[in-house]
Length: 273
Ligand code: PAF
Image 1 (cartoon, rainbow, N blue to C red):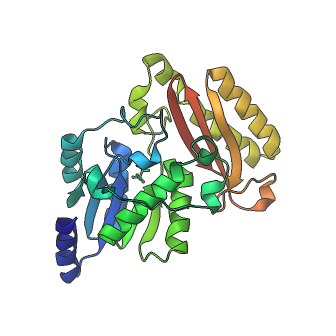
Image 2 (cartoon, helix red, strand yellow):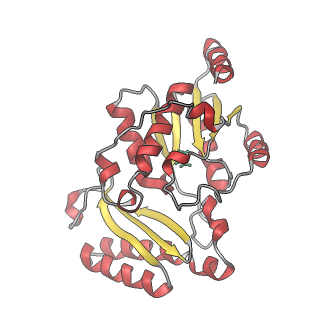
């Protein structure tokens, strides 16, 4: 971390602005789009790679999570990034580490938090550490993890971090499946079905825009997703900023958010309307 801080201090002395793209590695085009977004906001781009044990529950895929450091470094360099920070677990959580952030607001919206109760405490804690370690001018988070983006935005506001948080749109396969490092877990059969989650989100958004009630549109979408073979954790309409439940279009900007399992793979996705 001393090396990271020294390099960043050098850049700051030279008048550079710094953008951070926090990741867990296994880079795909979605991550590269975050790097591209960061380059619009800052002169020097830092990529952090850390598979954060604190945001995985026992029994989740921490051990199996894809790791490809060498390829990630090459992809980041090719994308025009400047510095990779890939700390060891002991650097982030040294013996005696005993602090965890407890997040409310969007972190307690009853979406991911309902199924992964300790997840956002782990995310907020690691993001707070990464922001303190690198003190970037801007940090970029994908809209694919929409609740995470709102949690981090809330944390930065509540705890007076000086870093600006910017979101970047979800990158999709040609058939609509949102890019995710976890897509490698899908069998060929599941991969063929997977885009129907996004299709259901889009259809639901269109129905609501055309005047179908939110409840009816959600009921239809939930049935469609179940018929396609998903086991749904949630398929919800929420206020786009607070993530509070909405029952009518008059309640402001709406985001539809869904999480569902196909076999052993859990997919999450969302759309605005
Ligand atoms: O979105 C991710 O990859 C992770 O949750 C993050 C933000 C890097 C924190 O570990």
